[in-house]
Length: 257
Image (cartoon, rainbow, N blue to C red; front, side, top):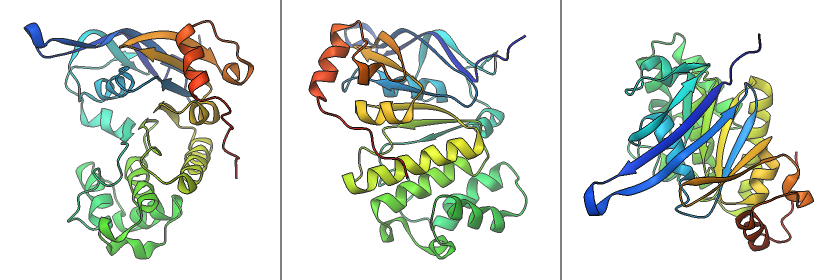
C-alpha cells in the first residue's frame, strides 16, 4: 500500500466577511504533494494562492473542504504537533521578524516552546545551515540585509525539523541579485532534508525552477495542473495559463549553484 500524500487539500473554500461584504477567496481548490516533492501555486495577485497556504496553517477561515497531513484530517485549531511538522516562510523578511528581538531570541523561542534540548547548538547550527556566521546570533533584524533576514526566516522555519515548508513568495521582496541565492539555498535544503514544499509565486520562472508540479489559480479557483517542463514546452490547455506565459515571455530558469 502506497504512502499517503504528505500534504493534501480537498475542495478547500475560504470565505471572508458576511452579507454584502462576503468574499469567496478560495473556491473548491484541491491539490496534493507527495513526500519530498514540491508543488507550486501560481497566478496573478488576488488569485487566492497565498490564502491557500494561510488556510493550511489555520490563519484563514476554512468554509468548506479539508486539509490532511500524512492522510490525517487536521482539526480546525492547529496543534503544537502540527507546528512541529509544518512551518511557513513569509514574503516579507522585513515584517516577519520581531524588530526588537535578537536573532538568537528569534531562533530560540520555538525551541523553548517545543522543549528542544541543546538550544545553543541548535541555534548556531541553524545559522550555519542557511549560510550565516554564528556571530549573527546577537544582531537585531535591522542590522541585516534583506537576504540575510530571509535566511534567518528560513532558519526559524527549519529549526523545529519540520517535514513540510509552506513558502509564500519568499524571494519577491528581495533584490534580483539575491533571489537566485535564496532559491538555490531552498533547493539544497529540500534535497538534504527530504522536505516537502508548497511554493507560492507569481513568477513562472521561479515555479519552473523550484517545483515538480504546479497549480495555476485564477479568481480563487484552480484553472490547470501541470507537470514539470510543461511551461518550457508550452504544453498547456488553459487560455489563462497562456496569458501568464505571455506576460513572462522569455523567462529563463535561475542557474543552479
